[in-house]
Length: 308
Ligand SMILES: Nc1ncnc2c1ncn2[C@@H]1O[C@H](COP(=O)(O)OP(=O)(O)OP(=O)(O)O)[C@@H](O)[C@H]1O
Ligand SMILES: [Mg+2]
Image (cartoon, rainbow, N blue to C red):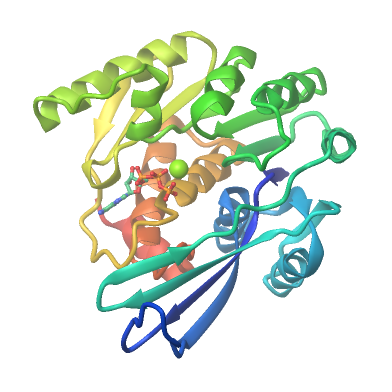
């Protein structure tokens, strides 16, 4: 069983306009409404992969109810803490200028609501369960929250996959999560690196080295995603770079979440290192072929898995 935790979900509304008028009325068309947020994206990909999973986290208000009904329609189990605040709703408008985003700040979480989330997580923490802790945290949630959650889950005999950034990642690592998948930006910020690399080769060599260094500190598997430059994987025996699959890219948004889902799927199915890499690369490339942050279809995944 896999449980995803999304502390900061969102209703993602995407739409098109023929012409973007600043200071005027814009007529939206082709409106699409999706339940979004990193852990929820992971749950959606796991659903395509046919892996039983449950989405947890915080939801509130009308947008929160919408997340619940959307997940229900997609047959994804959910058990969220209902908060007093309102789940954020983000609007993305596609025009000739590209994508213009209007993002809400999101709710402020109260200490008792955070405690309720820990209680819920504990209630689902059966030994052997894999928890995927994904994404940023809303206001009111301390930076050591994933660290504390990881400690609690380890005490319960669960495995933890941490996919986050900034202080949540830095502090979370202190609890030795079992699996991590930072992207290049997250890894660079973890090591305080601001300057660009001299070359693509230098960047890859650095990522290979850091994957190994991070893995030696606790995680069983470290994956570092490098966008179109592929990914690095380290299981303690080897740290290797794998090029990205050549696909027609529609939107790379959510490709990292798809990769996290693929790795979680493989771990929960006791698959070997080489197969984890195969699935991670195929599923994440497949996500790039879809609009927005949608997961790849089963057909796309099967086709990409067959390509060597
Ligand atoms: N242009 C691309 N072509 C093929 N594969 C890609 C491309 N961009 C990304 N990928 C695949 O997706 C993986 C994850 O991408 P990326 O490093 O951008 O993740 P991320 O930044 O965590 O994404 P997000 O947070 O939007 O989910 C890459 O390691 C690669 O396998
Ligand atoms: Mg990511």
